[in-house]
Amino acid sequence: QVLGLTYQEAELLKLRQEGLLSPRNVDDATDVHSKLASSIGELARDIVQTSEFYKVQNRSAVIDKVILTGGGAYLDNLCKHLEWLTGMPVALLDPLFSVRSTAAFEPQYIRGLAGQLTVAIGLAMRGGEA
Image (cartoon, rainbow, N blue to C red):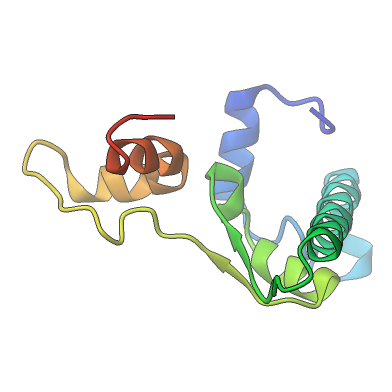
């Protein structure tokens, strides 16, 4: 939305371009880079504020890692940027870690959709109860 792209255009940009969060040098920075950096900065602030609020409410809680999921989690260098901005390790969740594959689907196709299947897989593992 910030970039004024359709969903399809944003997906193509995310999947096919590297360096969206890290231009090769300052002179290569574009409006896309600056808008994405601003959005990622807001996300990082939200992560830090939410974790701090949660720790105040739950004094024994320890939050020592951020786990990303969803299609946007695969944005090139997102984990590194969030680690730098939040000061916490950031990892991608693999929602397929405990899912057995079936011959009905091509494994590469399912692997490509993994980030978008997190909620569906989680609900299926709980028996479909929300």
